[in-house]
Length: 147
Image (cartoon, rainbow, N blue to C red):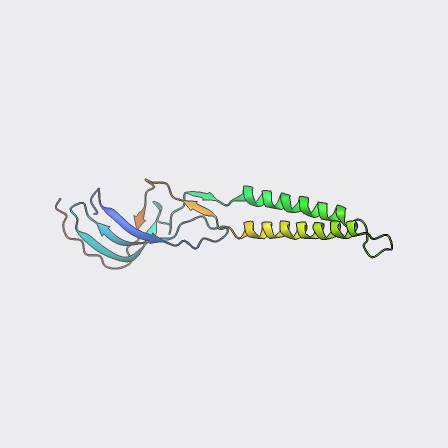
């Protein structure tokens, strides 16, 4: 058994994709309370149930995405209202052409905002004190611990 007060050192995978709710991690070292260090050679980390990775809090940034979508819709509606007059008719004026150009630019800006928000990775947070496990998939020799 690993004594209380031992520290685990590991690394996590920062490449998070949409819909992902678990932080994937591997353990690289175990430091005993007496200072002795054991190399773990990238042993997988798991939650208390033995499932790979850790799951705690997920922020999918829905509020920002919905806000960007509403803004994009508002800008698109504005561009449609401004594009009501056809600049190819005899009544075309510079003002109508400017309105249409402005409306198109605003619509494209809104679409770009939504695309940017969709590319934001979810934020996965693991609070301190969450129980973790090391899945040992290689022989690990532990000497009797003497504090």
